Structure formats: C-alpha cells, structure tokens
Length: 326
Image 1 (cartoon, one colour):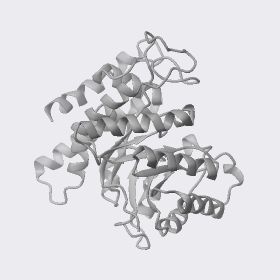
Image 2 (cartoon, rainbow, N blue to C red):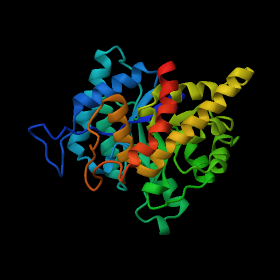
Image 3 (cartoon, rainbow, N blue to C red):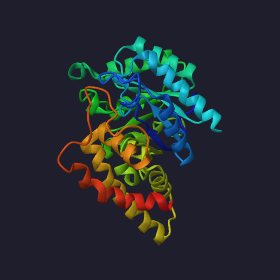
Image 4 (cartoon, rainbow, N blue to C red):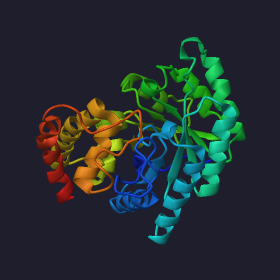
C-alpha cells in the first residue's frame, strides 16, 4: 500500500515564464523560468508550506509542452535539495484524457523527483461518460503509474465532469490511489468522501482546493488544502489549518480562527474572480516573484478593469497584517 502525501497546506504553484526583457522572450510562448520557479518554491518551503503541486490548474499544465515539464520539475527538486529540503513533497499534476500520455507524464515526474501525481479527471466527453468509465480510467492509470496518484476533481476546468462519492469509495480501495483534491466547493460531497467508513482515512487523504472553506471541511475529515492563495499568503494558511485542527481550542484561539478564516475567505475572492491571472499578479506584487502579467495565451494581461486591483488592496492589506505577524 502506497502512502499519501502528509497532511498540511500545499501550494499549486503557477508556472513562471521569463520576463519581457529576456532575450528569448516570445509573447506567444514565453519560455519557462526555472530560476524564479525555484526561488518561489524555496520561499514557500521556508514559510511552512508542506509541499508543492507543480503543473496543476494554476500551473497552466495544459499550456506546457511535455519537454519542459521534466526540466522544470528537476530544476525545482535540485534547488530544494541544495537549500536543505531533499525530501520535500512534490506532487506533479497531469491534465490529459489519454491514459498513455498521463502515465508517460507520471513516469517523467518520478524521474524528475516527484513523489506523487495529481491526475485531473478526464472531462472531454463528460456528458456521456459513465461513472464506471471514470473508475476504469483511473484504475488503468494507477496500475501503470510508477508513483502513487491523487484524484483531482475540478469540474470547472474539466467540462463539468462529475465524480460521485461512490466513485471515490471504489477508487480509494486501489493501493496506488492515495487521496484526492476536491475543487468544487460542495462540502456535502467532501463529507461523504472524507467520513465514509468504507474509506481508510490513513491511506486516502482528502484535500480541499479552496482555502475559503478550510475550517468547515477540516471538521469533517479533510486533512489540508491545496490552495493557490497560499502561494502569496503561506503563513496565514498554515496558521489557519493549525487552528482548524485544534479540538480543545481556547477562547482566544477560537476567536483567532474565526477572524483568520474571515480574512482568508475575503481574500480568496480575488482568485475566484480573476483565476490564474489574479494569482500571478498577487504573487508578483506582494512577494516579488515573476511578472505581474506573466501567463501564457490564451490567458493574458493583468487583473482587468478600471481601478480593479485597487479594489482589492484593503482586503489584501488586512491579511498581510496577519502574514507579517506570523
């Protein structure tokens, strides 16, 4: 039986591309920037983040050529090792509907130093895909993958494909399927997976993809979050998980937990509204990593709208106060 990733806060990191001043810059296909990627990874590791997801949805997995995946994964692994984090958890994402290509990416990820894979549910034919087909697809991937995998359920990026709690119960029994990331916001569905007595919670870890629901979902068995906002507010999310897991919290801790969840939930709205573009701009403006407008087409530009960024400054400043204090 394979082991799941440890409980904690993980960051689905954006993929950084070289700046416009770089001699190899191409506005349509800017090259990856392994130096910045590695610096951001080290910053997160030193800030208490449990591990990274590289090439998840935030990492623009579908925009990256396979030849660049391994180079970036290897570069980050090498940089973390040099900084004293040799076994730091790295989860490599995949987002292809082909079993063969998914397994190829997982094999490359292992060679580059990733310990787990996070496999997006195939959604191209979502309207006519039966649950049994999804079970067989993930089973085929798991049986061929050289590393344990997590099931990634994010209907918003996979044609609104559905995975039922019963499907997760079946998949959780496979020795090479060790957890899931749920990015749909349905707490009832998460509860039916995380608290299902038929699922061994020691070998199958349930993560939310939404920091704005962290306190509620920890109470029903979620072991942590794979949350993009932790890429620019890492200490705040780590502290929130610590508070959420306290079963005998003091009155002061209960108040801190409520206030911090409120600030995190308000801040997360920038991710809900602006997605990867907003995440990258926040990381650039607040932490100094990458360009403000650093995504690949068809994503482009910065947070759009007259004075739009300024509208978020108060919400971000409120959490920044907590971040600096931690």
